Length: 197
Image (cartoon, rainbow, N blue to C red):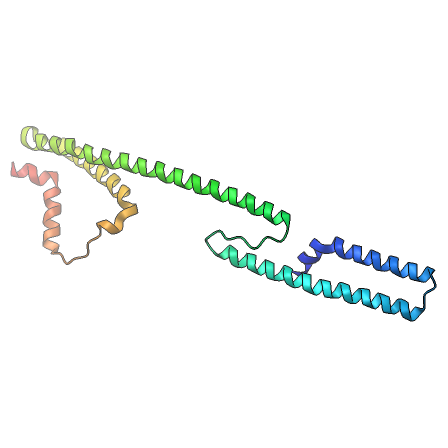
């Protein structure tokens, strides 16, 4: 972190160094007492050191605060210290607003698509059930019934996919007889209904 701080503020410290050397040369040319020159240079160094400690501490705390904000999911900005920070924050806020608008737009499109497919799946089930009755009662064709069963399974797969987002609404935990489950699956088998006819 110190390296990043020095990279950011190097021009300021180089300027301090330049002023200290300039002061030293002026004092040398004016033939000021050596003790006074050393005293002035030490005072300059102490001032620069105090500034460094205060500024570096602020930089470090500001950086830690930014890291803390980064872990938060909500968008919070630190207190503005410089004009450039204000500009960055305004830019980030615009990006955040754009992202929120896109999320809302995508959610609306997704909901419309899911509504459309849900209606379609429920509407297609009626003709499938009607066709199943026709085949079982009038034609008694095993191949047609098998293909119709495949279509019905694909429609049920599509319906299950649509329900994935709200699967917790469809779950119901309860004890159930294994015989009952097996008998229900046998009833769904198209060949069992043809044999009864």
